Length: 99
Image: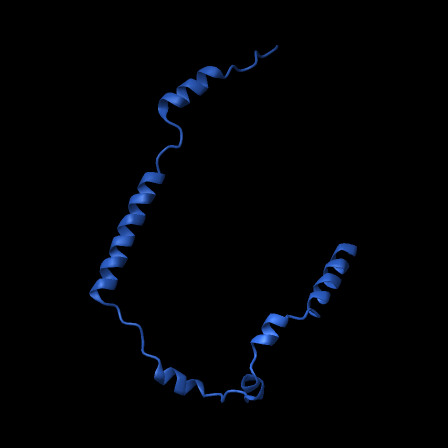
């Protein structure tokens, strides 16, 4: 509880920080400028052109798919080779069972 309270206190103190570099970057015209006009979303959607797939886009997507499949095939093999696995098994001795 104390840690979260300290975290909130430190976080709230950072909100009071001043950034003179940012304040100096504002010109008097910027400070006097009004807010931009809001446009209805229907107008914005009308201005946007839908993405179009081209032959180049399809070719690059197919090349990427092939590269990813080849990478998956390389990664699907065993991590430890057969000779290393045999060497590790030979180096492990199980404790003798009492009884």
